[in-house]
Structures are given as C-alpha cells and as structure tokens.
Image (cartoon, rainbow, N blue to C red):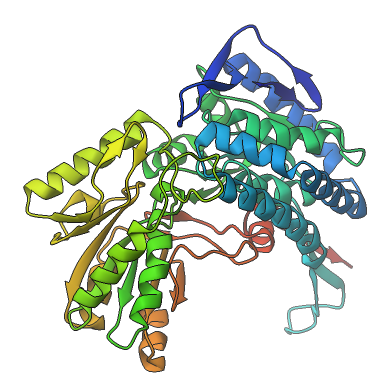
Length: 472
C-alpha cells in the first residue's frame, strides 16, 4: 500500500505518510511519503548528475529497457489495473484498458526513438559557403520534470517518462497525490529493470515547497505538465527560461448534421460524454445539433445514456464509477443548479449518491452558462440546437479552449471545411472528440496548452534538441 520515494535508483521512505482514500467506499487504499523542499533539491542534484551519464547510454540498451518494462507490465496487468481502480475509482474494465494502452505507449516510445535522426547539408549551396561536412544531430535535453494528473494515472505517466527516458534524459516524476501507488508501481518496474541506467528516474510526491523548488530550478530543461489551466499558468510564471509543454483543459464539442447517422452518433456521444465520469480533457461537453434532427437525436441520446450502468467500479459491466472527490462533485452540482436557475433543463441525471454522479444531459442551455463555456470535468453534456454547420462552427470556435472537436455528417465537403475551419489541435470526423490514438500527435491550442504528446512527436518537440555540427 505504501508509495515510496525514489532518489534516483535508491528507494527511500520518510516518517510522514499521507493516506489516499477510495473514491468509491472511503477505505484507505494507499499512502505516500509527504515530501519537502529538501527532498526536491536532493533529487534535482541526483538527476543532474545522472543526465551526464544517461545521454551516453547506448540506444539499444534504452530501447530494450522500455521493452522489458512493457513485458513486465503485461504480466502485472490485473494487479496494476486494480490499483488504478482503488485509487481513482475508474471502472475496472477501463483500468485494464489503461494498462493495455500504457504498454502500447511504452512500446511506441521505444520504436519511435529509432526514427529520430539528423540530416546532412551541402555547405557549397551558397557562394559564401565552402566545402565541409555539415549536419545536425538530435540529443537529449538533460533533465525532464514530468507532472501528471489523476484521470489517467498510468498511461499519462508513460506518455511523459517513456519517450523522455528512451531519448537519454534523466527524469523526475511528480505524480498526482490521488494515485501515488499507481505511479510508484510503474516507476519500480523501470528502476528494477536490468537495463536501467543508474539514477535515470526519480519519483517525488507533493509537500511543502516541492513544486516551487522543482519548477523554478534551472536543472530541469523541460517541464511536461498535464492538468488545469490555472496551474499551467503558475508553472509558466515560475519556470524561467526552459521549455514548458502544457496539456491543459478542454471544452470538447461536436456537431450533429442532418446528414449524419443519428442513432450511431447518439451511441458514440453517450460514450464520449460519460466515460471516466466525464473526467477527461477531451470529454464531450457540448453537442450542437441541427434543428431538423434535434428531437430525434435528443431522444436517442437519452436512451443510450439510460443504458449506461452506474455503480461499483469493481464490476465488469459498470460504465460510470465515482468521481474523484467531494470537491469535484460539489462543483458539478453547483454548475447544474446555476444553469437550471437560468432556465436550463435536465433531460436525465442531475442527481448523485455519495460520489456516484448520474450521467446528465442538459437542454435549453445558453453559451454563457458555466456548464457550456467552462471545462466541467464531470458526467455532464449540453445539447444546443443550431440552424446549420456554420452556426455550430462559430459557437465551437468561440471557446477559449481548443483541444479536440468533431462532427458527424455524410457530406465530404462539410467534413473538409470542418478540418480547415474548426480551431482545435485535433479534429475527428464521424466520431467523438474523445477519440485518441496514442501514436498520434495530441495537444491543443488557445488555453488548452502548448506542445504535443504522442511518443514520436514528444521526442521531436520536447525531449530532444538539435545540435548543429560543421567539420572543415
């Protein structure tokens, strides 16, 4: 149950531990070391020293390291999935899926590194040049600080540490306090591998002064953060001159055109809106529906939603488990009540028992309501009637966020326009904006962040840097 620290490859404990309670039944499911600024400073020094060695580790060793961890994780699939469910209340079926995706992410990272190459240049191309051997190569950045959230406590850790490590960096991981043991178990697999370079990976948890010490230090050359816009802004203000990659909030939307397969769209939208209790950055939050099919779609969506099982996350058939904590439930309840006071009406849901929040469809909403214009991060979706695609596009693009959008239609011209005109980092045609493949580039624009995840793209954008070389 204890999530211990890793000062590089050395596992340590502290006197003070903090318990983590199950969102489902309130029992203690894990505990983590309460850290402080001194711990952060020591780990920074270890990581800096290790980075001078990790960059010289042969690529075959780094690739085999990741593949070894992936194999061991396959053997531990059910145990790790249960830990995820214990700590964050994710239904066990989806926890198993997350373990599977984590394995894929690690393998993708190992293989992607073999495609990270340099290029030669002919320096006689201009009259001012002369004959030489000129090229650029990619090399590790040094130390990477990875800060991860609760909603995908395993796979989002892998998306940061796997490409960073295979690139030859030293990594400091600070995971969410809600799922410390999930992170600890993955880090342990990395560190105990026979291929692991000494001190290449460190693990630290929350505590007084930890964030400021890590973020403001000059030792990390890259900070990769997934979380809220507010914390992202704070990191940018304190980071100084270093690369910062931010995967922040979203307000995902879709448009249902009159030409769409309405029943299929409703089925997929129920999944996109309510999977993981809506606690996904690309959870479907706004559905703009052509007025000619609005009633048909609304009825179909309610029917699909009512078939989703809410309950114990330990049962295979459960689709919606508990939200992560009381604060998250309270915010969702407040926003629903506020919208209802302004005239919105729930078509289903809008009730909860303990942290089990029923999937909620809101109608007769306005663009100014918080459940429409802000990131809800709860099992709430709003239906909005529009005249056509143009109106939907304007309302979708009016958001301060721009992570992923989608449309459902059977119109090639409209699909092409949506790809060009919708303002988001990712566009999906004929499926939900919640769709993500781990090998793709993933990241938003506007307030949704800076940079891209996806192993190859993270390697190119964040975890390697160009060095130019000329030999005369």
